[in-house]
Image (cartoon, rainbow, N blue to C red):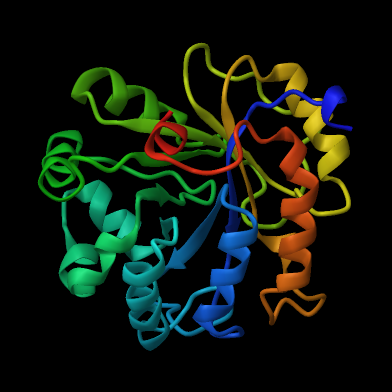
Length: 253
């Protein structure tokens, strides 16, 4: 099968680990699949709910990160995204030191229009995240934010094509990769459809990409981050992964 695939994936992000599992159960997955990144959903209002781990859980994850060097991304939602766009660093103030475990951050707009104070936003990014990339959700509503911030302020920004709004829905067509830009693809990917969808994505991808899955890695009732599905997803992705492990060059494009 490897001969029939294009090795275009640098990172496979599995999103939604929460209090339904113990943080340490992520360690053997990271060892078996060294190209995995765990996407952690972060919301001031929803901490401790399904998909959004509690502060205690995150503190335990921080300790593991220091010991095991897990590759993590922080996916900001809700008020923390709106505040960041307005130039208010509430996330960093609320989180203390543990936000430093995230190698990159994703802004989840969920197809809701966001207003950005570009100067204040860029100042916060330079203060807190000068060396960390920012992922912008390209959801059909907020694309102009990505293009403006990248062009005018020189922020290290990567686009994630995701029009599912967190509903786990596949797009009718995958967008073409932006030329010479490291891009991500998400929305409706699952262990059962990934092989087929990677063939579709490979037709529009002209360079290195990452992929991200969330909704369809959970139990049928959405209450549990299903580790068996995670492993199946990573196993299907493996032939498409270039190299076999993550390093800074792979994550940051």
